[in-house]
Length: 296
Image (cartoon, rainbow, N blue to C red):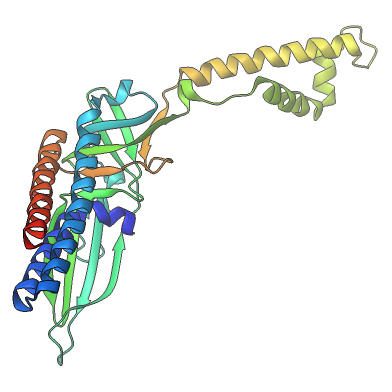
């Protein structure tokens, strides 16, 4: 869960960290606490700057691929989410039809002012995106989902927060692309020939009818070789037909733990967003280091 949330909330967490440290330093200012606060500011800004720069570079360095011609491996896709009924799920809080959801439920006790989290959840159902060249299934498990629609509602002592991606909207995905079936089918001629011959052996009468050429009621070595060649021809023909079929494209979390991003923003806007945050965190780093040196 943390892997999926960290990229989305890094701006919120770091900004709150900046404000909290600055407020602490102002309210309890002493020479030692001033140095400590600046060290903490520098540490947070370094972490945030590296994280946002990493995401900005990942988006900028990979060109957007067309689904129909995307290479197998780490790619960037930008398409439209299917609005077909099979592609839709419902948010458990509001019942809104969507392709992906994440939610939190908080409660507030009468004696306290703070909200306490009581439950959370995130969908892991695959959904489909498409462009003018093809369709691709998206497995959102472990994805960092950026800029979904956020909805907040209240029911008595409960606060409901949900984030949704809708069908029909544009979806950006950066992850590991692969094609199952079709030209990429993993087929083994030897194993399949053996399986077909074993199946033929289950019907000895039909096997003799086809390959007992001398009519002696036995399948000798030469006749068995003819049967093996016939089975091989059938399997090779079947494999050719399988490879002619369209495979199923899917994009999911990379196995090497590289970034897996899903967003309702275009790649250009998403890159610009991370670029702005990268500049901001770098400025905070420079200011905190400069102030620390000045205090020394």
